[in-house]
Amino acid sequence: MRITITGPAADSDRALLERHGFAAADGRPDVVVAFGGDGALMRAEHDFPGIPKLLLRASRICKLCAKLPNEEVLARVRDGRYEVRELPKLRVTARGMHLDGMNDVIVHNADPRHGIRYRVYVDGREVGGEIIGDGVVVATPFGSTGYYRSITDSSFVVGMGLAFNNSTEQSDHIVLPDTAEIRLVILRGPAVCYADNHRESIELLDGDEVLISKSPEIARLVVVES
Image 1 (cartoon, rainbow, N blue to C red):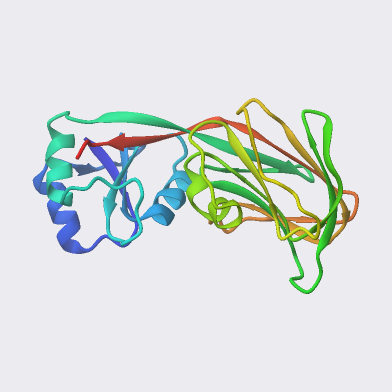
Image 2 (tube, helix red, strand yellow):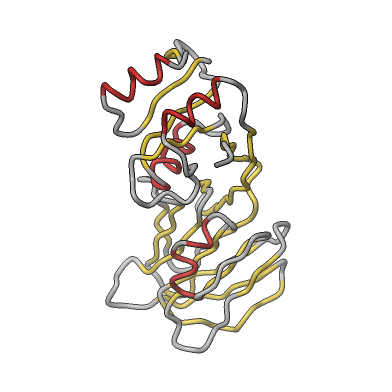
């Protein structure tokens, strides 16, 4: 199996992969092996979108890591005892640019001293009127156990979740079907939009519109049952 390695892999990790028959790919790999936790997985998906990811534990926080030693995980993958699970992603489009994330999309005030004013529309229908606050978090089921849960004290398993971050008025979170389109209009910024833990971001000014929906891309995860 031809692989590319991402994350803080030590020489011993590389030797372990070689012992189990995994060889470095010259071109497009069959699998991207990500050492770390949830953050390492998101960075690997950003760098190699759509290619199956094998996540090996090198972090205490790793929701999708198998509850097995890395050596046992590799042995099972080598022997074909795994499945590839597809995970939905989100796409945010603004100012002629777009970002994709498997965890969440966040629109946040650029200056923490000042809230932003904005309106939200779901499939063309306004939700909540003019809102003042720090912004919104839109999460996938995978991402709903992160920032989204810290705001809502909840998570979900299907669809996409819309959470209002620190708004001055009571604004309940909403779980939407994954076919929904969310549109934000920034009435007073500045704000910034980003996806997952990626370095790229989109700066938002007064009057800018932000569209968030299911991405045409799909993340793929190599899963070994514990």
